Image (cartoon, rainbow over all chains, first blue to last red; front, side, top):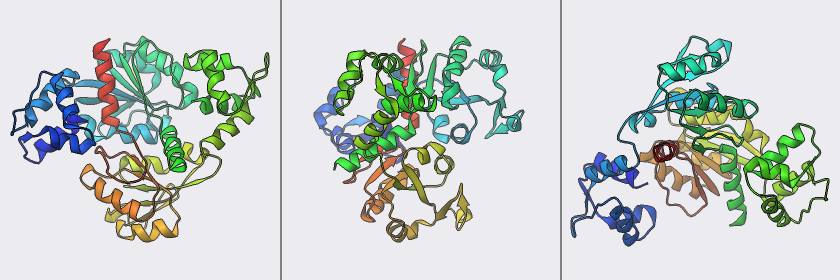
Length: 191
Length: 191
C-alpha cells in the first residue's frame, strides 16, 4: 500500500512525502506510518518528509521486487487472457513469459504477445522459460492436478484464481472473485 | 470456504459430509469445523455428518446469498470484460445487469449479454436497473470520482479492482492483482 502511494507521488512529481500525507490516504495514524517505515531503516526528515522515489526503492528491495519475476499464466480463459495483457504486472516487476491452455483453438496462438502452449509441454516449457511463478486460472476440477505439475516442474509460487484450495508445498496466494463478492454482499446486508 | 466444499459435495452426489472431510480440505481441525457450523445452529449427526445441501442453504441464508444481487461492472477493459461473462457470478447469487464504459467503440454494444452504457448515464441507469453492488474496474486516476458517483446513485457496496484506496461510506472489498503477486513474490523469497 505504501508503495502504491509513493509511486503515485513520484508520478505526480512530488519528490518528498510526509508521514501524515501517507497516513491520510489509508486512514491510519502518522505514528503507524513512521513505525512501519522505520522497520525498513527509513526515517523522514522533520518538516520535509520522506524521499518518495528512494523510499519506494527500499520497499521494493525489502519485498524482493527489485528484480523481474518470470510468470506463466495457466488457463487462457476469460480471466487468464485478461491477465496476459495486464499492464500493471509489467510495471511491477513481473513478466508474463508464457501461457498454457489445452483449448485446440488457442494452440500455437499468441495473446497480447504471449505464446499459448498446450499443457502437455508444461514441464519442458517451465524449465526452458525459467518460470518462477504461475497464475492458475483453470477450472476448479483440474486445479489441484495442474498445481502439482507446476510445482514438480519447478514453479516456486502460485497465484490461485481457481475456486478451490490447493495442497502444494510452495506459497499460494488466493484470489477468489466469488468469495470477495459474497463478503461484500454480507457486509452490505449487515450495515 | 465451507460453502465451496458443500457445493462440491452436492455436485458429486455426496448428500452427507463429515466434519473431518471438511476439516481435511482446509487443513483445520474437526473441532473448528463443528464450532463454526454450530454458530449457524447446525450440528452433524454422529457417524453420518451434515446434510450437504441443507447446510449449504443455511450458510447462504446467513451470508444473505439466498437472493439475487444486481451488479454493475464499471469499466469494460480487459478485466471488466472478463468479469461480465464470469459464469460463477451467475451461479452464486449475482447477476450482472449492466456495464459502464466511456470508450466510444463500446457505446451501444453488448458484451456477454450485458449492455455497455456511457458513464454519463450512470445515475439514471443505476436507478432504473436497481443496481445494488458495483465492480469497479476503471483506471486508478478516476476510481475515487466514479466511486463517489456510484454511491450517490444508490450503490450499496463496491468490489474495487482499481489499484487505489477508495473513500466512500459503503462497504468496499478490494482485489489488487499486483499486490497479490507482490505478496506471493515476497513469500517465495522468504521461504
